[in-house]
Length: 144
Length: 429
Image (cartoon, rainbow over all chains, first blue to last red; front, side, top):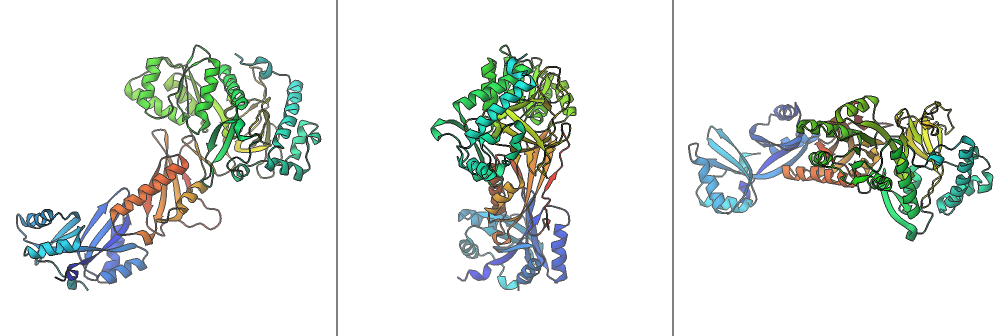
């Protein structure tokens, strides 16, 4: 199985925890006509990491870098869930049973249903298990 | 009350002849140190060129940097086997300044502490809680042995665990305490929260950082003590160099043991009595580590007025520093030390800002550093680890807990010329 095509590049941006930082990031992406599909903010002691799935990760990376942001790519996977009670359980159970740890996760619910974005310790293993269970993974070709 | 009345009240002429005798002895002792031997010969000074006390001005100043350059044992005038103890103070480049003591030095030092404590009226009957660091900091062991010499009952409680400190004061009937003034403020608040009135306390000895008259009033009111200012520095043994008497109007510096000059820090010229300048001291009784015209960096003046207690000329309370040294929770910190620590950590940049606040009467230092973009993995935990690492390295080097704030690359101010990296937001205590 070609697992690579399911590995998606999330952009992770270091941000100080102070007013206006998210606005600055969002403004830069808007200017480049980059659409944000999903995002989350993880907060620690005085700083945070903004994580986002965007339609043009490379373009977003270059733009934010040129503005001086500290930005990195992180490999994640995105799973279609049933947008109904028990949908999350199905996905989480597959990974749990396989002994795959979820480092963090966030989700969005769009026109084509709900999508769960996962950062896991064993990416390839996770892709195989999820595919074998019959669930659908988003392909990286969705992003440009 | 006097510990050594004769020496503490010597007439001026007797004092000066004793000082001159001891100065010559100190110069010969210093000549056993390669550094001083060269300094003196470069300046063309021998013991015979010192005919009066004023002749000391022929000798070049010694600076803290000279001690650092001699790290670790370059300034010792006796073989290491004669050294019975070593203390260190923080240095600007991460390397500490080492000070050594012979058995006799320790005895002389304890004697000076005994003079100070007796001067403020504490004695054998008193129970003394010594609430300062007992490690490399000279304040702990210095006061400890001085107080034991007097015969006080000494509780070596050291720092930390304020509630336990308060319980001991209550349970043991402590009459005398020694700590930093800011810790005393903290102690008084915790005691109030605990509903403890600490009635047994009578005397508070506070030092290692500058403090104001208004803090004196507050501490006296809250703790029920008479508060005395204590001054010293490790290079001159430690605490015990100068101390307030019961008049509490200036500090008596022990002229038989320390030859005092006040200079203009820019020109190096002496200033008149009553004029502020940098305190320069030549210790007259040190064996292991003699010093000549040591620039303390502390700003004070020689006071014109005599004292009702009949002891000799006083210096004013210290009002500041002539260099960029900071005193945080009684610990000396140079901004360059912080820079030195950051240079060793590739995950962060070399720019930094330091903020000092006083929260609940305790000094808190916050250091802002930029994350190095090459080390940004995108993971929050990696960032948290970098933050922890910087905090640990700073604590190891400064012996001080600091709050580390990671900021975005390029966000800290860049300075041209003299950098203003330290924002001290503490109000004067």
